[in-house]
Length: 195
Image 1 (tube, helix red, strand yellow):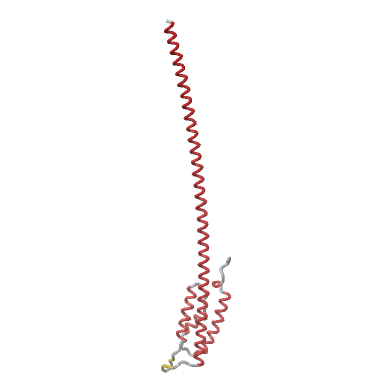
Image 2 (cartoon, rainbow, N blue to C red):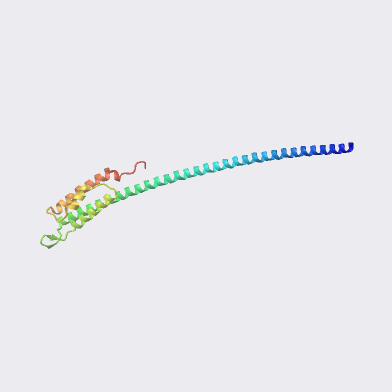
């Protein structure tokens, strides 16, 4: 019986050791699982931080791009406004050139009247020049330039008139003075603030 008891005790000891080994293995497995979970959480935090950093960088890049686009559009608007100002100045100069041509034509016709082609009709360039003046003034207004009231009145007067070339020449001179005053003072012809 002693042998049975000894064998039974041996198996009890072996079973106890096996239970102890199983318990240690379970503890080691739990520790490894815990470490794995901790590592996964740490990796997840790092991934989240990296993602947030990437999103922040993309947001900064987007803001920088938007600011650059806004600045580029401001510069384009400014360049367009400057181009329109230059076009208004050029058109104002064209109006002045037409007025000078009108004055020269009227003066020439005073000195040397155009030939008559019938009763009360002559070959004069004044009506065509007045039409050119009307077109030039309309184009200036369409470009956003100043109103040249005297030019509109003179062009709308028509020709031949009872006033003749002398009045046209005098009106052209007065009109040149008005254009000079507009060129000096009109805001649409002045440089843009901040340039």
